[in-house]
Image (cartoon, rainbow, N blue to C red; front, side, top):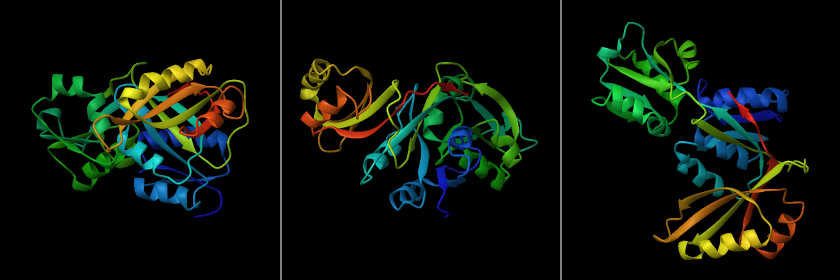
Length: 275
Protein backbone atom coordinates (compact mmCIF):
# COMPACT_ATOMS: atom_id res chain seq x y z
CA UNK A 1 0.00 0.00 0.00
CA UNK A 2 1.10 3.61 -0.59
CA UNK A 3 1.84 6.02 2.23
CA UNK A 4 -1.49 7.78 1.94
CA UNK A 5 -4.09 5.07 2.35
CA UNK A 6 -7.45 5.12 4.07
CA UNK A 7 -9.22 1.77 4.29
CA UNK A 8 -12.73 0.62 5.09
CA UNK A 9 -14.58 -2.60 5.76
CA UNK A 10 -15.33 -3.93 2.28
CA UNK A 11 -16.19 -5.14 -0.21
CA UNK A 12 -17.42 -2.40 -2.55
CA UNK A 13 -21.12 -1.75 -2.34
CA UNK A 14 -21.42 -2.14 1.43
CA UNK A 15 -22.76 0.57 3.73
CA UNK A 16 -19.18 1.03 4.94
CA UNK A 17 -18.18 1.64 1.32
CA UNK A 18 -20.78 4.39 0.98
CA UNK A 19 -19.85 5.99 4.30
CA UNK A 20 -16.12 5.84 3.51
CA UNK A 21 -16.54 7.54 0.14
CA UNK A 22 -18.66 10.28 1.69
CA UNK A 23 -16.33 10.88 4.64
CA UNK A 24 -12.87 10.48 3.10
CA UNK A 25 -13.64 12.43 -0.10
CA UNK A 26 -13.81 15.64 1.93
CA UNK A 27 -11.54 14.86 4.87
CA UNK A 28 -8.64 13.02 3.21
CA UNK A 29 -9.24 13.63 -0.52
CA UNK A 30 -5.65 12.76 -1.51
CA UNK A 31 -5.70 9.31 0.09
CA UNK A 32 -6.22 6.10 -1.82
CA UNK A 33 -9.39 4.39 -0.62
CA UNK A 34 -9.06 0.63 -0.17
CA UNK A 35 -11.70 -1.99 0.79
CA UNK A 36 -10.43 -4.71 3.13
CA UNK A 37 -11.92 -7.63 5.02
CA UNK A 38 -12.10 -7.37 8.81
CA UNK A 39 -8.80 -9.12 9.55
CA UNK A 40 -6.88 -7.17 6.92
CA UNK A 41 -8.48 -3.90 8.03
CA UNK A 42 -7.24 -4.15 11.60
CA UNK A 43 -3.88 -5.53 10.48
CA UNK A 44 -3.39 -2.55 8.16
CA UNK A 45 -4.10 -0.16 11.01
CA UNK A 46 -1.87 -1.98 13.49
CA UNK A 47 1.07 -2.14 11.05
CA UNK A 48 0.47 1.44 9.84
CA UNK A 49 -0.07 0.33 6.25
CA UNK A 50 -3.26 2.39 6.43
CA UNK A 51 -3.29 5.84 8.00
CA UNK A 52 -7.00 5.64 8.74
CA UNK A 53 -9.66 2.96 8.80
CA UNK A 54 -13.45 3.25 8.92
CA UNK A 55 -15.91 0.65 10.17
CA UNK A 56 -19.39 0.49 11.72
CA UNK A 57 -19.34 0.29 15.50
CA UNK A 58 -22.96 0.64 16.60
CA UNK A 59 -26.49 0.96 15.28
CA UNK A 60 -29.59 2.51 16.76
CA UNK A 61 -31.54 -0.74 16.34
CA UNK A 62 -28.94 -3.39 17.20
CA UNK A 63 -26.51 -1.59 19.54
CA UNK A 64 -22.79 -2.39 19.49
CA UNK A 65 -21.51 -4.49 16.61
CA UNK A 66 -19.86 -6.96 18.98
CA UNK A 67 -17.32 -8.51 16.63
CA UNK A 68 -16.03 -5.11 15.52
CA UNK A 69 -15.90 -3.83 19.09
CA UNK A 70 -13.87 -6.82 20.25
CA UNK A 71 -11.34 -6.32 17.49
CA UNK A 72 -11.08 -2.61 18.18
CA UNK A 73 -10.34 -2.92 21.90
CA UNK A 74 -7.85 -5.70 21.11
CA UNK A 75 -5.61 -3.22 19.29
CA UNK A 76 -2.44 -2.21 21.13
CA UNK A 77 -3.22 1.44 20.39
CA UNK A 78 -6.59 2.94 19.50
CA UNK A 79 -7.20 6.51 18.41
CA UNK A 80 -10.74 7.31 17.30
CA UNK A 81 -10.41 10.59 15.39
CA UNK A 82 -13.95 10.94 14.03
CA UNK A 83 -17.45 9.56 13.98
CA UNK A 84 -19.73 9.43 10.96
CA UNK A 85 -23.45 8.96 11.47
CA UNK A 86 -25.45 7.68 8.54
CA UNK A 87 -29.09 6.80 8.03
CA UNK A 88 -29.39 3.24 6.76
CA UNK A 89 -32.05 1.47 4.75
CA UNK A 90 -31.99 -1.76 2.84
CA UNK A 91 -32.96 -3.12 -0.54
CA UNK A 92 -33.90 -6.70 -1.31
CA UNK A 93 -31.77 -7.69 -4.32
CA UNK A 94 -31.89 -10.75 -6.56
CA UNK A 95 -30.57 -11.99 -9.89
CA UNK A 96 -32.42 -10.77 -13.01
CA UNK A 97 -35.48 -12.89 -13.69
CA UNK A 98 -35.97 -13.93 -10.05
CA UNK A 99 -39.27 -12.97 -8.39
CA UNK A 100 -40.09 -12.69 -4.70
CA UNK A 101 -42.24 -15.82 -5.00
CA UNK A 102 -39.16 -17.81 -6.10
CA UNK A 103 -37.20 -17.12 -2.94
CA UNK A 104 -36.14 -19.77 -0.45
CA UNK A 105 -33.06 -18.09 1.07
CA UNK A 106 -32.04 -14.54 2.00
CA UNK A 107 -28.38 -13.68 2.58
CA UNK A 108 -27.05 -10.75 4.58
CA UNK A 109 -24.99 -9.56 7.52
CA UNK A 110 -26.43 -10.55 10.93
CA UNK A 111 -26.97 -6.89 11.88
CA UNK A 112 -29.06 -6.45 8.74
CA UNK A 113 -31.28 -9.34 9.84
CA UNK A 114 -31.69 -7.72 13.26
CA UNK A 115 -32.61 -4.38 11.76
CA UNK A 116 -35.11 -5.80 9.26
CA UNK A 117 -36.66 -8.47 11.46
CA UNK A 118 -40.12 -6.87 11.35
CA UNK A 119 -40.07 -6.71 7.55
CA UNK A 120 -38.82 -10.29 7.27
CA UNK A 121 -41.39 -11.59 9.75
CA UNK A 122 -44.20 -9.91 7.85
CA UNK A 123 -43.09 -10.85 4.33
CA UNK A 124 -40.66 -13.78 4.42
CA UNK A 125 -41.11 -15.61 7.71
CA UNK A 126 -40.83 -18.99 5.95
CA UNK A 127 -37.42 -18.37 4.33
CA UNK A 128 -33.98 -19.48 5.50
CA UNK A 129 -31.67 -16.64 6.57
CA UNK A 130 -27.98 -17.15 5.81
CA UNK A 131 -25.38 -14.88 7.42
CA UNK A 132 -22.50 -13.31 5.49
CA UNK A 133 -19.55 -11.13 6.51
CA UNK A 134 -21.12 -8.00 5.00
CA UNK A 135 -24.15 -6.87 3.03
CA UNK A 136 -22.00 -6.40 -0.07
CA UNK A 137 -20.57 -9.91 0.31
CA UNK A 138 -24.17 -11.16 0.26
CA UNK A 139 -24.72 -9.33 -3.03
CA UNK A 140 -21.48 -10.74 -4.45
CA UNK A 141 -22.56 -14.28 -3.53
CA UNK A 142 -25.90 -13.85 -5.30
CA UNK A 143 -24.11 -12.57 -8.41
CA UNK A 144 -21.42 -15.26 -8.38
CA UNK A 145 -23.90 -18.08 -7.94
CA UNK A 146 -26.53 -16.67 -10.30
CA UNK A 147 -28.99 -17.84 -7.65
CA UNK A 148 -32.53 -18.48 -8.82
CA UNK A 149 -34.06 -19.02 -5.38
CA UNK A 150 -32.15 -16.51 -3.24
CA UNK A 151 -31.93 -12.79 -2.55
CA UNK A 152 -29.92 -10.53 -0.29
CA UNK A 153 -30.43 -7.51 1.92
CA UNK A 154 -27.92 -4.85 0.90
CA UNK A 155 -27.65 -1.17 -0.05
CA UNK A 156 -29.60 -0.32 -3.18
CA UNK A 157 -26.35 0.90 -4.76
CA UNK A 158 -25.05 -2.68 -4.70
CA UNK A 159 -27.57 -3.60 -7.41
CA UNK A 160 -25.63 -1.63 -10.03
CA UNK A 161 -22.24 -2.88 -8.86
CA UNK A 162 -23.20 -6.56 -8.92
CA UNK A 163 -25.75 -6.60 -11.73
CA UNK A 164 -28.75 -7.42 -9.55
CA UNK A 165 -32.33 -6.22 -9.63
CA UNK A 166 -34.28 -4.56 -6.81
CA UNK A 167 -37.24 -6.53 -5.49
CA UNK A 168 -37.96 -4.08 -2.66
CA UNK A 169 -36.37 -0.82 -1.54
CA UNK A 170 -36.29 1.55 1.42
CA UNK A 171 -36.72 -1.27 3.93
CA UNK A 172 -36.55 0.16 7.47
CA UNK A 173 -36.00 3.66 6.10
CA UNK A 174 -36.40 6.39 8.70
CA UNK A 175 -34.69 8.34 11.47
CA UNK A 176 -34.91 5.29 13.74
CA UNK A 177 -32.32 3.39 11.68
CA UNK A 178 -28.92 5.02 12.16
CA UNK A 179 -25.47 3.44 11.94
CA UNK A 180 -22.50 5.06 13.65
CA UNK A 181 -19.18 4.57 11.91
CA UNK A 182 -15.89 5.38 13.60
CA UNK A 183 -12.64 6.44 11.99
CA UNK A 184 -9.37 5.31 13.56
CA UNK A 185 -6.38 7.50 12.76
CA UNK A 186 -3.02 8.68 14.07
CA UNK A 187 -3.45 12.21 15.43
CA UNK A 188 -6.06 13.36 17.93
CA UNK A 189 -7.98 16.35 16.56
CA UNK A 190 -7.53 19.60 18.46
CA UNK A 191 -10.40 20.67 20.73
CA UNK A 192 -13.18 22.29 18.69
CA UNK A 193 -15.52 23.37 21.48
CA UNK A 194 -18.02 20.71 20.42
CA UNK A 195 -16.30 17.42 21.15
CA UNK A 196 -16.96 14.03 22.63
CA UNK A 197 -14.64 11.39 24.05
CA UNK A 198 -15.05 7.61 24.09
CA UNK A 199 -13.92 5.90 27.30
CA UNK A 200 -13.63 2.17 27.99
CA UNK A 201 -13.67 0.46 31.38
CA UNK A 202 -13.94 -3.14 32.53
CA UNK A 203 -16.40 -3.07 35.43
CA UNK A 204 -18.13 -5.60 37.62
CA UNK A 205 -21.86 -5.04 37.29
CA UNK A 206 -22.21 -4.34 41.01
CA UNK A 207 -19.76 -1.43 40.66
CA UNK A 208 -21.52 0.28 37.76
CA UNK A 209 -23.61 2.59 39.95
CA UNK A 210 -20.47 3.74 41.79
CA UNK A 211 -18.73 4.41 38.48
CA UNK A 212 -21.65 6.44 37.15
CA UNK A 213 -21.80 8.46 40.36
CA UNK A 214 -18.08 9.18 40.14
CA UNK A 215 -18.43 10.41 36.57
CA UNK A 216 -21.28 12.72 37.52
CA UNK A 217 -19.43 13.99 40.60
CA UNK A 218 -16.47 14.81 38.35
CA UNK A 219 -18.76 16.98 36.15
CA UNK A 220 -18.52 14.51 33.26
CA UNK A 221 -21.64 14.61 31.09
CA UNK A 222 -22.53 11.12 29.84
CA UNK A 223 -24.01 11.04 26.33
CA UNK A 224 -24.31 7.29 25.80
CA UNK A 225 -23.40 3.96 27.38
CA UNK A 226 -22.82 0.58 25.72
CA UNK A 227 -21.98 -2.70 27.41
CA UNK A 228 -20.41 -5.89 26.13
CA UNK A 229 -19.46 -9.11 27.99
CA UNK A 230 -15.79 -9.52 28.83
CA UNK A 231 -15.97 -13.32 28.79
CA UNK A 232 -14.48 -13.34 32.29
CA UNK A 233 -17.68 -14.00 34.22
CA UNK A 234 -21.39 -13.41 34.12
CA UNK A 235 -21.13 -10.14 36.08
CA UNK A 236 -18.15 -8.63 34.25
CA UNK A 237 -18.67 -6.31 31.30
CA UNK A 238 -16.85 -3.78 29.19
CA UNK A 239 -18.61 -0.46 29.41
CA UNK A 240 -18.17 2.18 26.74
CA UNK A 241 -18.96 5.69 27.93
CA UNK A 242 -19.40 8.42 25.36
CA UNK A 243 -18.98 11.70 27.23
CA UNK A 244 -18.97 15.40 26.40
CA UNK A 245 -15.68 17.20 26.09
CA UNK A 246 -12.11 16.66 24.95
CA UNK A 247 -9.50 14.62 26.82
CA UNK A 248 -7.03 17.52 26.60
CA UNK A 249 -9.42 19.87 28.40
CA UNK A 250 -10.94 19.96 31.86
CA UNK A 251 -12.75 18.28 33.46
CA UNK A 252 -11.84 15.19 31.40
CA UNK A 253 -8.09 15.74 31.56
CA UNK A 254 -8.08 15.72 35.36
CA UNK A 255 -10.53 12.83 35.53
CA UNK A 256 -8.34 10.59 33.36
CA UNK A 257 -5.30 11.35 35.52
CA UNK A 258 -7.21 10.38 38.66
CA UNK A 259 -8.86 7.30 37.12
CA UNK A 260 -6.21 5.29 35.20
CA UNK A 261 -8.66 2.37 34.95
CA UNK A 262 -10.44 4.21 32.14
CA UNK A 263 -8.97 3.76 28.67
CA UNK A 264 -9.29 6.78 26.41
CA UNK A 265 -10.24 5.52 22.94
CA UNK A 266 -10.27 8.99 21.40
CA UNK A 267 -11.59 12.54 21.38
CA UNK A 268 -13.22 13.97 18.26
CA UNK A 269 -15.76 16.49 17.04
CA UNK A 270 -19.44 15.64 17.43
CA UNK A 271 -20.77 14.63 14.01
CA UNK A 272 -24.04 15.53 12.37
CA UNK A 273 -26.27 13.22 10.36
CA UNK A 274 -25.65 11.99 6.83
CA UNK A 275 -27.47 9.83 4.35
